[in-house]
Length: 214
Image (cartoon, one colour):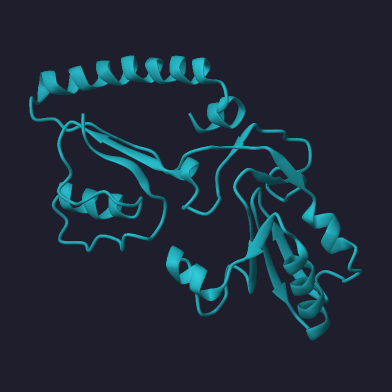
């Protein structure tokens, strides 16, 4: 479904047809499970949504124009929607920070942003500077997808983006409120009886658009 939505997220009829296919197949699985155990639980969880791509930006080229050298001055990793930088001298820090601050289609994530999202690490293992694109934008070249992939949808934006909402569907109401994707872990631990695992804070991770039984 992830691969399908990358290429078809704006095509309502095709998406509806694919969802109906999954509905039929999962119904057969559920019927077989309930034939063995009438109390069987079936839950369907997504890890994110899919945002339509409307614009592209070549940040790698903009950074290359600064005439810094890797790995002497810095290291950079470009994903589809996020860029991470490790900076090894003050010239690189000033140049790259200044460049990123001037780009209007995204922003540098502050420490408060990272804490809010539950991805702050004191050792900066995932980047000293992390730049996140605005929803709907895509890096035109990246380490993940190169420069030839042209998806019509992408994920990996701020969870506040409405297209990023995930879903939780189950024939049994969850024992733990499903507010974010991080709560799925606690729910699974509780479901299989492995102890009381605290659920996430409401702001952590991808939000669920709906949480309930079906």
